[in-house]
Length: 261
Image (cartoon, rainbow, N blue to C red; front, side, top):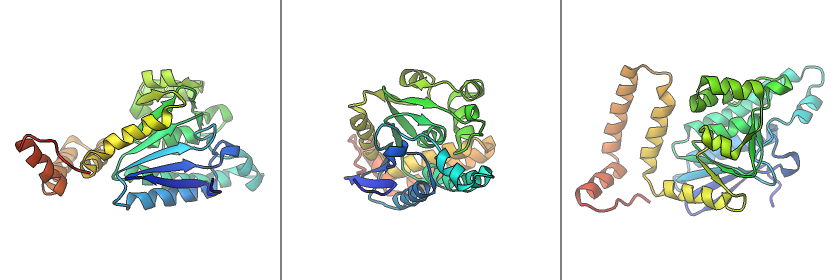
């Protein structure tokens, strides 16, 4: 196993990003976030990659920020270390959210604090039945980062987001599926297969069309209806002129399955 804090592997046109600090439960530090940001940017521009899976090495998906390292770095004013770390974390989150191809979090173990936020930054989530989610921040006297305050209420509604943040209870895979935090639950042994089956299904679909849908959904919460309609108009015109759009329309008219891959 590589010593790199984030490992990229590829199988056909599906890439896997693996957080690789298992002894620290894949806690976020500057090195890991630098590598995650760089890896996400690399895959965003790799036309051979059609879907991305994000997971963790070892027992955890991600335990959040490395509080021990933060405290050692700035023992008198740890806020300085949080400021630097959150800045890099947010750059990585923005890369994942802006990536014009689908991302899937394969939550293999506990996802807490920043790990919870990182999972929510992905487009879809598949969770092991042995894993749990925990927001973590407020119980530790801290504040939510990594886009968690943006993603959480959009997924579950404001009232439930407040409950999750304030009570800071462990959320089982079954409960996470029930309230819409994850899209699939799998046994621990089958998690990787289920995540990659989902990634493969997405890779069979038109990547450009998926990217446009993602871009429109991301923009929808800050736009008026009029602005969103204009963006939709621009996107469908762009899609209609694309190779994917032409293949999809021709397949429909010819009564055959389209071939995008």
